[in-house]
Length: 511
Image (tube, rainbow, N blue to C red):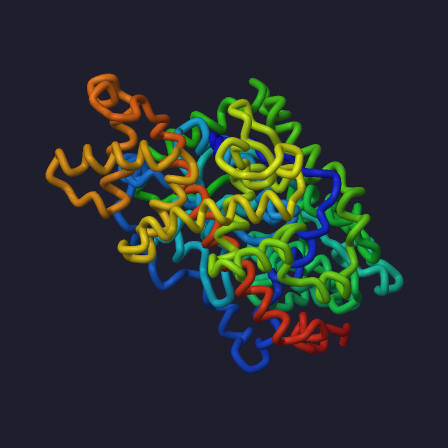
């Protein structure tokens, strides 16, 4: 089974991604009449945990996993046929690839504060299209910018006539709905200080910009504020939006990091400098080819999203992770194997491409090597056959390590699936030679890295091992598995609340 870092590409169809895309971002809104005091939100911004934990780049590198805090939306992070994509995700992914780190996505859930997740150490960076504001700088630090955006008012087309100026907006007392913890609220407050008596209406913190735009398009909100790039992207697949006046120009977008992590900030700045910098006159930015491709993919295209955008259809099919969920569930259940773990393996092995073939001859969804199974070669390109063979192999590895605790059992089985049991046995013998516990994955992972060095592998029964790939393979799958669990939990919660309750049945009409 072959691994190695693979660059995710956005495919032409985003059906599975949009299945849960906009609904997940609005989960807690249906409960807000009972659980959320919006007036309290007006005066609450700071997280409970404001003092950051001591964890800089060295500690992150030692752990080997970089945790990205973000929201589930079409420009930050989402699933496309089981594969993780999104502008922020792909940009962070490139950073982790260059720094030999596995990437774990931490989705901001209901009642969670991203700044608290960052400072408490649950994540290492907030990558969510964040504008740098003085209020946020009191809590976190920011990298150099990687984008410039304008903030614009966005109106529902059901609002007639559409206001053309701020003065008209004030005169008609049209409510502008934004989150208290957003840079949009900060700008609107500044306009209020300048004498504009704006009618600002608070939205729950969990309702991100894209979800707010959905509410505006459906006429549930009359107006909101969005960055121009996000409006352009959303407007390509959604009717019912009308752009209004610009209220802020050239806002800098950056990643948020802990204020006591200077080495991490410096490393991220070096990465971003390669992709985004200003000309000497600072009038226009220069972007790398890679960054321009991402901008084109997520903010300037969009027909593939429009093809499948239908909120009612999304609700009916929520919870889909990949195109092969039913087959994976059926095969996995018959062998008493966790289907979501198998799904995460397939994402890593083939990115759900049944015609995939590696340089080593592994084929199909689970990259099964023909000589290891009693199935004709061509049959391995059949999804059902391939999944059955792959799950059988994984099951054998699980049974081989059944005497271990569940976490180590799964990690050892994944490692054996990737590199073969011989290399894992060599690594465990090396761990024993070092007077450490061979039943702990962390020890074996360290030994696998050593088996890439001549002085170690020349004494091993199975020789050189591509240890870094196996360690990364296990980390990536375990991280993806946890992300899949989070997405399913959020979608199940939304299903329980019902499609009609997305906005909590609030009255957002103009007074």
